[in-house]
Image (cartoon, rainbow, N blue to C red; front, side):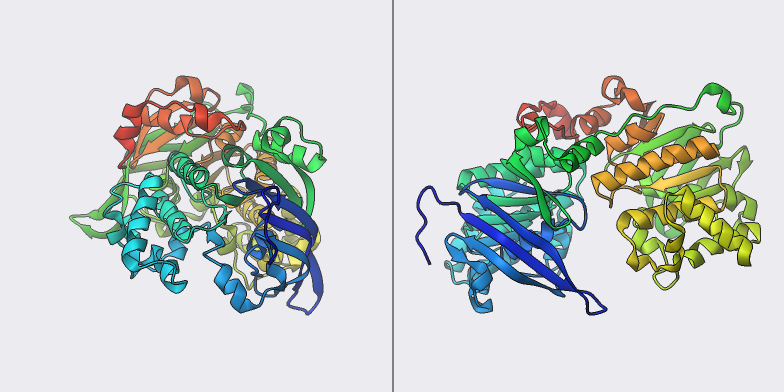
Length: 558
């Protein structure tokens, strides 16, 4: 191992090549000669859409390749040692000590049957770094540095007894216990609400600066990257498109793909349909005093009450956004309107007609008029059926179409969502995330609905792909006179497609306002906290963020 001088980079990657073998046995190159450096204490972000190679490159820093992949060439030096040339035993000794990893899903990283503290200090025991008592004391110090509540006792809890944001910080403590020189963050805030994300970002940045620890931050969210990264590496198709300091990339990007990423982050604002194009007399959707919940019923009411006294209406041709953090009842509302989760009190009216709470009791015409598009396209599409078969089912059910007539309509539906006709022969597993979500949308359109319930339909998509789906939905609305109920925690997406917004908190609607005036018109304390927590494309945003301490304290234990 060569000694590092003060001017040497901590991480030196040269001409990295990673290949994969497909199910059919074909060999493909997925990382194509990537080179970059990371200085001690520097945080470098890897950004790009799905399939660009971000996580594949990050994992290679530990000498790890995903199933079916292999490192085929190049150099990966960490503190002067070439990871690519190490034995697997040497790599195992490196992991957790020189290089550590914070996953996207902290919940998946923890054993639910073991106490948190025992898991955080496990790496210390594996590598025999320090006595158990010293490791436990160090873990408590890390809990305190990461701004976790009750740092002296939180380690005695089980993973399910802490919040998502707390568990993500505990995963960081697990990664930091061995004093690594480099920490890999793999989209660690993607699954968090914006209010929780701020706490986590501040904690990550603080502890990395304090320990002068270098980092690789994998993300497709440029606003989050702007708050934590010193430099940005832009990737597409396994190749570097552009590298530069964060401020420079944001202010003066040179590569067209970088410009495309930045443009997609700030989608074009929604323009309402002209008044003349709408029927203003009867709402397409009216919800009155709606209550819904989960679990066994007692006295006709479920044990867990999620929605409480929900009232709103949506006029034809208009779009209504529903925002709020996880657990606020957004998805439960969509399911209650659709009849998937029967409400136990209140009314749902579609075009003035009252809907039975249970899906099974609704008429075919009622089902046809209201369709739902789910968040996860992977689980919403039958993996064993072709796209053509998936789209043919609603055509047969609602319109009695079969044979050549159905196939013609399937081709038309694919064209509507800007997909080629040949896609109808393929299985869902052969499609990208964006293509699958377009198929989900095409399936909803097959019924020829008037109202589509959209449940976080872009949250699993990259910024560029998500922006393209939103623009497609706008075009379809103009062509087909649709209305959308759009559920999301992404306020910029809501602003891009909605006329009005409902803010939900703990199962109740606390405020309604115009989508393009959220920042100025929000009056409820929770609405103000939520809106002020959305990151901006400005590296100084987090440092300059001033939120009312009373608001933060009021909602801290929600």
